[in-house]
Image (tube, rainbow, N blue to C red; front, side, top):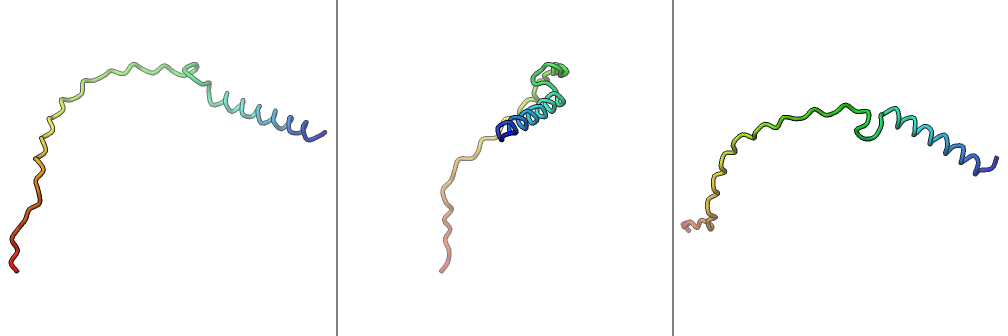
Length: 66
């Protein structure tokens, strides 16, 4: 057996393990999975209005005694 046939054999073993694991964890997509129940959308509670932010003011300058 040369290295190419050994690599091919190991590749086939790894591929078969991956295939078995993929089947064990379930098919991909919606097939085989339970259907999702239709969610009832409830109306969102009335959002309270956000109070307006005060206008930006400049720095406060105070008289400091020397």
